[in-house]
Amino acid sequence: MNLSDELQELATKLTALHEFLCTNQFSQLKPVDRILLLRQYGHMDQYAKVLQVRVNQLPIDQEARTFQSHEQRVIDELTELTKKVDALRAFKQSDKFLAIDTRNRGLLDEQFQFMKLYALTLVKRIGLFIPYSTGDTQ
Image (cartoon, rainbow, N blue to C red):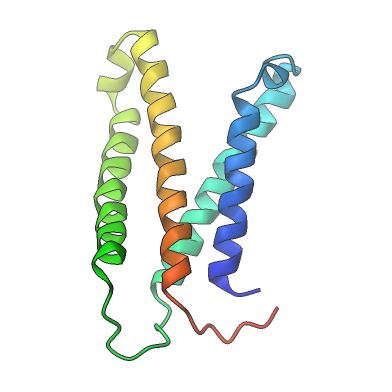
């Protein structure tokens, strides 16, 4: 399996886990199980970021690849979204985040999760029109 395929598979698993985290089944789990699943989600998200960095460093198969206009828009959209995700992540780690009311913090947490899923979806779309040669055969 190459890195692009691994990233797409991980994005699918992250999406499925996120959907489960939003169900009543999740809320009925023991607190320790909920914590473990949330940690798993966080670790999977971090791993997806590492894979994305590695995929971005791979050489593109085609020389001087020019993107079609719709492809370039998706790439630009991911670039802008990544900036917003990073800004929100930084805000969530600041004292200002703790100063806002619980309801708004919860909504910002929810927004953050959906933004990350949106970014992973864009990554999967980009993976469909950027062929990579990794040399990986596993």
